[in-house]
Length: 188
Image (cartoon, rainbow, N blue to C red; front, side, top):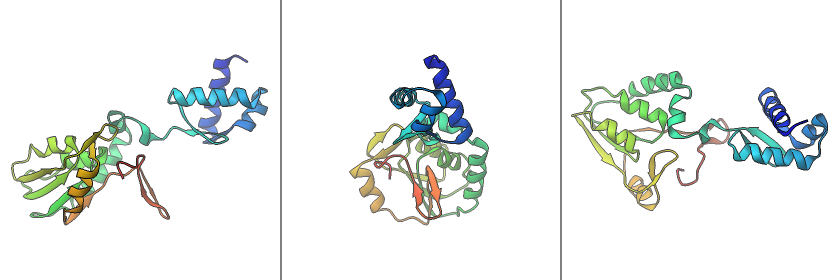
């Protein structure tokens, strides 16, 4: 079996089963586990899957670029943003996190909203500049390109000293036992 065919088979198995194990692929494709591990490593470097001990998982949508994530589940993000905007009241101090869903919130705030919005997201800051009655507060820090937000000690300290009535977070995952998660410790 040619390398390209083998890798195509690996990707098909991953799509079908939601995970692949090197030992099972080795038997199914009649090649050594070392060959499968090399294939998985190369597929991971190409961004086609997420390599884990013993096999691979589908690539996490959260690992995609900010621009690509804007297109993922766009309708759901709009629905979440519309629901979130309904919770916002005049005169509030609002923390608006970075990410593609909070950006949808920034784009849907009422034009007559009088509020203070604190954000560490340059895209959100750009949206807030369009609202005449909103006082925008930009949190400084080092730019984290993946999520287009500021991070680091300055950002943490600024948020530590902020008090808000409402907070809109963008997260990568939500689990009933583990809670909220994101893909990078700096962003946490």
